[in-house]
Amino acid sequence: MHPLSFRIPVDISPALHPLITAFFEDALQIRGVAVETVNAELLYIFRFFRCFGSNASCEKLMRSVSPESISVFLAEYAAGHSCGSVRWMQVSLRSFLRFAYRSSLLDRDLSALVPRWKIRRLGSVPRSLPDECIARLRSGIDRSTAEGMRDSAMICLLATYGVRGVQIRHLRLDGIDWRNDRIHFPAAKGGRPVEQHLIAEAGNLLSEYVRCARPESEYPEVFLTLRAPFAPLPNATYLSSTIKRHIKRLGLVLPAGVSHGTHGFRHA
Image (tube, rainbow, N blue to C red; front, side, top):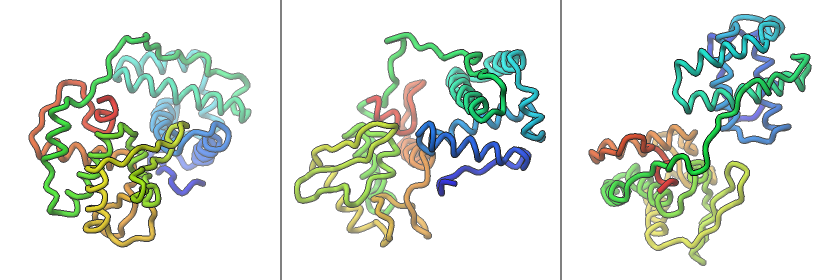
């Protein structure tokens, strides 16, 4: 199994663990999706299991899955969850049902019974961090500490280049071309790597962090955790929580609906 694996909740029967592992490996090898995406899908599949019998065997759980039971489940889920959660459940459940059919766990493909979340073209406007909030974040962090030097550099990169949080977390030391003033971000979500001019502010903040605050480590990633054992930033939640912490420290009040994490910079 991939080393960046998930933790199966304790309320999910061990009898279902082989099924979960098979879905995980199928997603990576057959569907070719990122580990982070599979982990996100599993959060919703676990909710599906809990409704259909998280303590049951794989065979018993599959026997309870039918067009009728799926329709009832989705209707009840939609009534008690946000639009974003419903959309994720629909996407995750379709993936699982297709997998179950390909693996002969179901005798027919029931994924078509799960409706697709429809988004009208130009029906919504991305909610971005206001310019004044970004300016406060870029100038208001105390860089006298290792935490401040690291976080200032990360926020500068997010605000300048509009890359995804995962590209910040996976940025490598050899991705910074100091001699030619270039920075190379790895690909994300099936896209292409991003190469951009390394602006002076970003270069200065990166240099300050690498020279003065980054712990000695064999890891190639630029940004590391703050306490031993030092390691690359573990997940999206870690980075988003870092940004939220600075928003709170600076007393910034964001408009309703604006992301307090990395997406707010990307939309801006």
